[in-house]
Image (cartoon, rainbow over the protein chains, first blue to last red):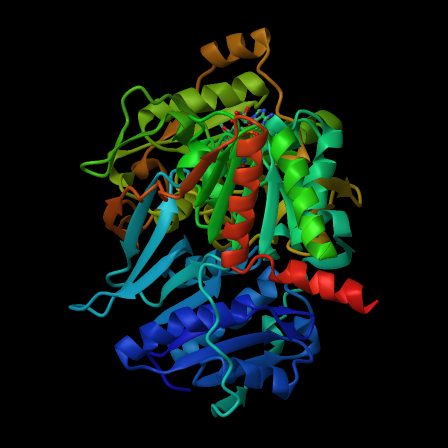
Length: 333
Length: 279
Ligand SMILES: Cc1cc2nc3c(=O)[nH]c(=O)nc-3n(C[C@H](O)[C@H](O)[C@H](O)COP(=O)(O)OP(=O)(O)OC[C@H]3O[C@@H](n4cnc5c(N)ncnc54)[C@H](O)[C@@H]3O)c2cc1C
């Protein structure tokens, strides 16, 4: 395998690639072209079919290296860390990128510690410094109050996790060709200490809000639990899911997996509709980078209105029923 | 059961003010507090101690003023507190911080597990937990929301929050976990706790007290460097409509519908429509 390459770590759910695998290729593609090095996508898992790996190439990878064996069924930090650490030591990439998903944010720091590599978490921008060829990694910090740009001048590889949905995958090009290399799994990589006992899938009600294109979020202004049905109706009309501020979650109007913000989830939907949410810094930290933001709030001074692309200053109990009714009407037409 | 909780002192984010001209943080007037996400780790550790016996040691690396955070942890119910402080540690990134903390944890001696918060609200990296697990070669589970001690206190079972739901894992002890806020409801310090915390002797360790490779600590030992800090643009200068009466309500909703339609968000809605018509 080519040394000094740029690697992106693909992420699988079962035997299928997650979309974030393609997003980081799109990120890495620009950087690899600037550096003039190949982009290699690394896939670690079990039972990954050739056609699935081809998709990494169709989305912009130059080649794929896959480690695929039964022992790698399902993410598991220790074993995955052994695999990735060993591959990095063997093939010496200069940059390693992964998505800042739950697993990406567990695996990369584990690997970076062992390799004494520099790692920057949850980046929203990546670039190459002209003079040095170093990776410039930009990320929000202090509750999104600042953007810090970080580099790793000497240690290698330079590692970063990238905020999911902060970039779009490249269009699929089925004519792109590239090599798929299968790297044998070594028995000593298998760490059996942590056992997976099972999995409780989210119910529909707990949908993964981070994957949603449209989020309709409610805050303390919703007044009571029953009123969340208004949000559900709006979300159903638009094909979205429900998000919430901490105030709403703390009042048990909706469960914690729906919480957006500093102590909840960071979301980057194409559309975020904030209803009865004031826009505290800790809430903004979780949704500020959404594509379009609509805010409905009766307080003309509410900070959420400042960052909205479309702001409605008014009583949500007037606006929501009318909006829902109009959407229904449109549907009947 | 001996539990170690690494904590961090952070500025209260709600109070952080930015100097928009220089792009720097105005620290004055912003109170320092225990990283709010660490409170869940402290609470988890104390609850485990109450249930299974043992002790909880809070450990923090930071400036001498981080003593305040440690005393607060003691006031909540931690038994011991260790402050890792030395000029030589200044400028540490997450790698160097974790390296230094791991040396201090080794010095504390045998323990059953480490409970950490999922991330700090200032740096917001969430890297120190996994870093420590790697440095100390402990089995780890991140982002957990429940924890049960099983098999005669030789293992724990946890539920780990992932995108699709919750994974159920079993880890042999000693192990490291990072917790999410769902796991517990942090208690307030009691008066007795506060009194104990006031009087308590903290352990203070500097670089010379730890078995460290000095090339791996502080700014010099840190692989990463901050090159630039800016405050991002916060306003989007979008359009704004006000609802005052029936007429303006109608206008506002129509404009909102136009906005949504122009940006393609009613496409799904249209699809729903067609689906229904077809049926
Ligand atoms: C360490 C830390 C972490 C935190 N993490 C998070 C987090 O992850 N997520 C989060 O959201 N918060 C978080 N917070 C809390 C945050 O500071 C705010 O308290 C919270 O976001 C406020 O929620 P809210 O906007 O729903 O409520 P409020 O601030 O009370 O706002 C309610 C809004 O509803 C409007 N309203 C009321 N009635 C109506 C009506 N009839 N029509 C229209 N508008 C109406 C009001 O004008 C107001 O703007 C955190 C705080 C701290 C200190």
